[in-house]
Image 1 (cartoon, one colour):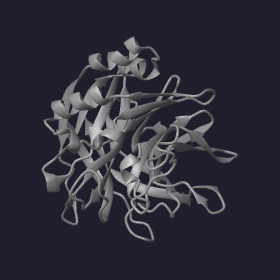
Image 2 (cartoon, rainbow, N blue to C red; image 1 turned 30 degrees about the horizontal axis):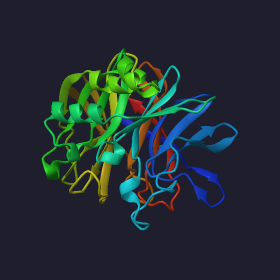
Image 3 (spheres, one colour; image 1 turned 45 degrees about the horizontal axis):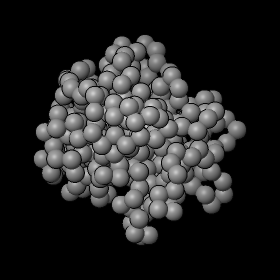
Image 4 (tube, one colour; image 1 turned 90 degrees about the vertical axis):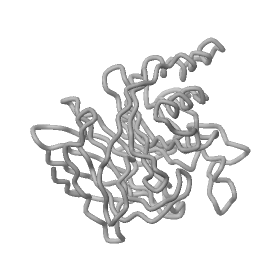
Length: 303
């Protein structure tokens, strides 16, 4: 497999107003929905420009969150985005109690938000992890299953892994408004555990940051080699890659070329088009700095 970067651009809502901490991307209406992991709103990237889409109401009066402001512990940390028939499903990373939520965002009407703590706890149990070790950063749709990926952390002895979740049941739980619907979170089935070794870059293990399903049923994942001790703190990124998975097998890994300022920390991945041997992708990069605009990359993967 070979990966090339065909183009790169910074994402701005307007002058001096960057799209911050881009963490996931999915098709949305006539464009793309980009999640910001440290904000209550997402960015709708459209041909005519970029505008905000509210995902959550303010949390304790805050719409953005940062370590400097002492509010990082409040952030929803939406790290996975999956296009579904009604819109885009955003999923929190699960790395703290505040991050065990999902939101269903639609182009034409207010979406729904649900606490999925019971589901996250079952995912942790299936993976053999403590809840505080969860860091679910990518997901893709495979038929009626959501394949949800844990970002590994070799320093903590946690491998990259995936689980399958009953997607119709999960969507019904998120969209439901009654107490009976909310209680259905207890009945969302979790299983199909798979673990992956993607290798290393510069002595740091690659760990899955997002995933897309390909037309032939295989899965392409983005991965970052980030030197961090846990699921919450950022660390230096020494490289990034794409990896091709077939069920539990890693078929190929290809390093992503560095940018002018160093490695791209790709956290969101989506398919633009696919044909024989070539996948056209759009990716978003998290700069780990709220003052720096996230970047959008146009990628080609030659399988």
